[in-house]
Image 1 (cartoon, rainbow, N blue to C red):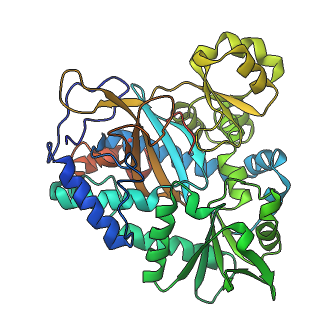
Image 2 (image 1 turned 90 degrees about the vertical axis):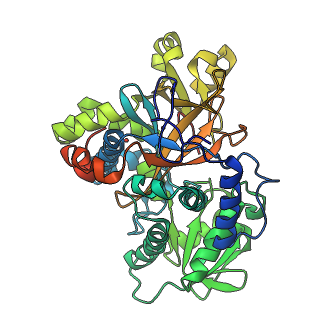
Length: 451
């Protein structure tokens, strides 16, 4: 295994770094050990053969700093009253409820092209954090020098502590002074979900910190004595993995009622999705005139315009213009997830185009993903990559990547899957670069996909 060259908009010809030729079998064995230590007893190899890549993705300190600058700029604007009002005007009814908590497990997804990183979407129930953390442990166990190239976050133990602290902060932010004691991880048919193994990892992690955790289908929830119950136990906090972001489906009525009546803390919640993950918000964040009228500073406007893929809402009045320019665009449903119903403009048929026009879609500037070869042979296949920042309250907790072939991330590509992210140079050597670009908040740190 070669750990990868800097992610680039152009094909990477060579790759270098510490432990440049780790044996993929060694990574696989180390990963199995890491997952077992985290509480996952069964091997994922038979059921999830392409969930993890043996490769790494390298990013430059400058590009890492640029991605952080975009995250900070987005957080600044999302706190602005004019933005909140605009986002909530187009949101569903449940998003009007303000739960006082920021919402956990945000995912900021970037593509990196020749001009630097571009944010292509934000997700509010981003999956893969503990899976990525286990993979990070595996690579660090196989190559100790990589520890000096961690992209700003601490070692895996510190990240685990931050995850627990995040959930406890959500609990306290909702106004509770007593300890957080019981969490329910809620999803439709949870054991049937592709990332169900991560639910088990969360259950084990929280248990090690004294927080009892159950995994439940929303139909297993009940309201009793002004509390939400799951599987016969009262619940303090729901870690919400549902893709019904507004909690509107009939099967989710109990959770919706408990949320709106403040009987349980739900995170992430409908308001967080409305403020962060509705794709129409990216049209606001890349509209220089709107940003100026809202009072956003010129510096922040520049960071957003340069660092986010230009997005606009699809409207019938612009149909001809959008169709003519479709080869440079990527079309996404405003509340999409999991790469469902997303289309590259150059692949569109007239039939699909008519469906897009009759639905709620955005058109986004097509930002080609970075690529890196699967191995060092001259005819090596190329793997596309994106980089995800797991973020809470504006701070990155973990940076991980996904490698894939095809239109979108899919976890079906041999050699692809989650991949750890490291810096192109040791952290100590890159400190001056980061400082020159604003440390954790400035400068230039790979997905035109949903997840």
